[in-house]
Image (cartoon, rainbow, N blue to C red; front, side):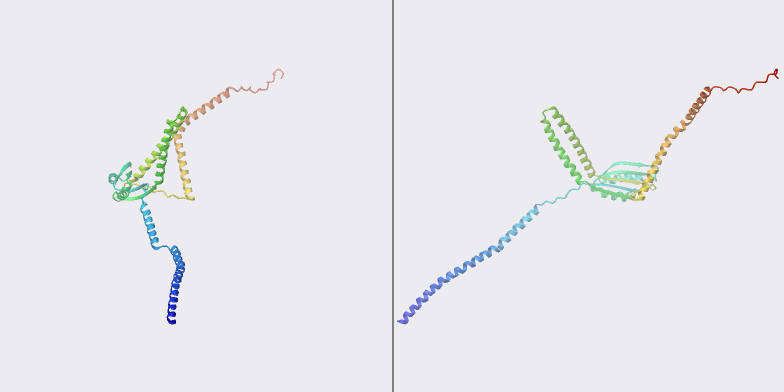
Length: 321
């Protein structure tokens, strides 16, 4: 009986201890799991979620791609004026002139001016000024230098007038808006004085507007057509050598010598113009001087009183002797 009771008691104690242990274990697990969960939450908050970060990165990249794709890259239209001059020695100037006109016409250009001198066939020269579109300018230059004869000299220059064109266009728009405002103000004018003042201002702005329009037209013409000056030389015609720019003592001496020669040329020219008048008037002046002197001498002779003859001693009386 004692053994049975002891066993029952032991079983009950073990059950109680088991229940207590289970409860305490749950409490222990709960108490231990709470800080762990808190630490895990804090760590999760501190550490970015990989899925969210990748999504954000994908969105950022998409936004960047969208921004880049929305940027439109446009080629800026530059406004450039092309000018050139070429000297070519040819066998026959007349034939070369006609051939040059054909080359330029094929390039879309035209002849704007022509000058020629035909002292002799060998010394004949011609100067042609062409207007050529920029698209055919280089091709025309190449053909003129190779097909006409022997190229002696070539000079090209370019001028970018993009900013100047933009400035003229901006000023033109401002002038047009100003004129519109003045015309509106003219309709509201009440007195004659106000009307005259507004009309005077409109006339001034209109003149400025026309000047800007002329500048815009001239720039557009120069940009639309390149200018080429072509000089054709006969077989023995002299080619003008370009002057070299220099400075310093020698340049000053050269300039002074040229100025002296120019002054001498002017003086000799004046002397040549006056000399015929001197040759004609000199005898007349000499005759006039002679007449004046003779008249003075005659007047001086008339004004003199004749002097008395010298007295001689009286002869002795013969009776007294």
